Image 1 (cartoon, rainbow, N blue to C red):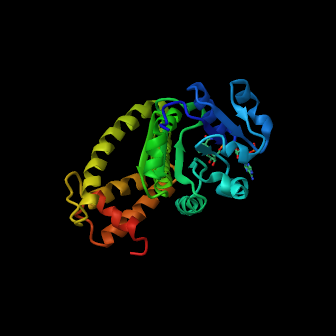
Image 2 (image 1 turned 90 degrees about the horizontal axis):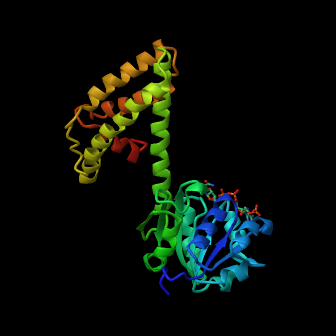
Image 3 (image 1 turned 30 degrees about the vertical axis):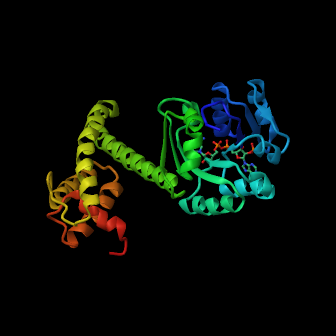
Length: 296
Ligand code: FVH
């Protein structure tokens, strides 16, 4: 059965996200069976053509592809553990948020029950589901992803399979969230600095966003250096010691403008540690050594 022939799909969990997932399958014409602990949440979907299964076991056996989206992995086990035999021969695509460890354990658990396992991470809010910009990562069974790719792609235009290790989808997810918070904190901190001189955040915004284009170029060079793994880290743009001097300026300006120094002080301490380890003449990519070995 190929995933692009409107094969039946089951969605377990009809919270805000589960409802959006089921609606996307319905819009594309897939026979969609749903189950939720609180069945009232299925009302809109049933009006749109979904079949509300009376039990989770009946939902799971409605088709091969079973998409699960619950609050936690514990909730998932509460629902699926009692089903045992019903999972045999299914493809479980688990979009519940959890850890890479839980994803790996769940693959073992699923295979013991005869199910192929895909762990997924959604980098989107419910309103984005089905849109071109929605990013969803999957990892786990390559053959299961290949078979159901067209169906899973209905949930987001930027659906990507990242590898056989089921923990990878979670790792991509949290790594990108880290990029988001790092960037947002720096933007808001910068906005506070400029506000101290009467400049609006909206005036700062275009400079901040275009600066990200330059940062993208730096990161491109550093990614290559990190992967080369030869510990050379050539400072093609700026030495770590030069970065450090600029970080001191940021720290000083924060202090004198009455803006919190927590963020620059954190970066200052981190880069100082790299300098103490003799990375002063290296590029910023050398920081990878601190992150890879927190005890070093
Ligand atoms: N909403 C979002 O934007 C984010 C985007 C990124 C990833 N998440 C993850 O998706 C999972 C579900 O999130 P949600 O937003 O749908 O959450 P809720 O609206 O709170 O729905 C929770 C569903 O889980 C069911 N549930 C909870 N505990 C149990 C249980 N012990 N047994 C059976 N079902 C359970 C709950 O059922 P009910 O309360 O309606 O009866 C909902 O179906 C989550 O991992 C996010 O991190 C979404």
